[in-house]
Amino acid sequence: MAETDKPLLIKRYASRRLYNTETSDYVTLEDIAGFIRQGREVQIIDLKTGDDLTRQYLLQIVAEHESKGENVLPVDVLTDLVRSYASGMQSVMPQFLAASFEMLRGKQSKVMENLTKIQNPMASIPGFEALRKQQEAFLKSMMGGAGAMPGWPGTAAEPEGEAPAKEDDIADIKRQLAELQSKLSKL
Image (cartoon, rainbow, N blue to C red):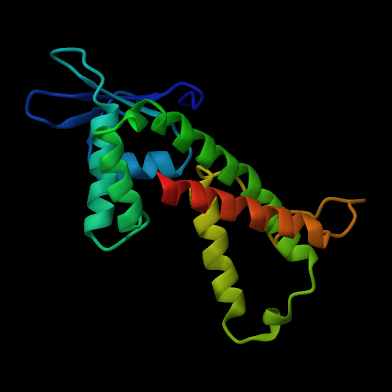
């Protein structure tokens, strides 16, 4: 069984084929994207030069998904990223993006937990359950394939002894999201 705490080593041959060193077979970009969605760290190394090509291939995976209409990155965010390469923001941008995604991952579990604790009038709307399952799958993929979403009925036991969500918790999350959007638009 493979060790999941070590990055999965993928070697790129001169023919540009990608070789999974754990399973001793060739893989595609979609296979690599699948490993990442399952929560695996991946490292892609050029066999001949030893160069780390991970960043290049991850960007290629994102570009392919975006070109297929699976748009996650709004045009204004992409524009701001391009601008950051020509400005002094280039040195700040990686830390900002990393902190933003870390905050997003941290707040997603709390939001999902709070949503299940609040009496939701939309639950009686036809199709709401399917929408909830889609949202759960999306958040699960964003969190690196972590286990079931805490607090969702049928996915995990609800935490015992916790007080119901407070309105100010939701307001705080909304405020933080608005601040993040404001910071992104300024960049």
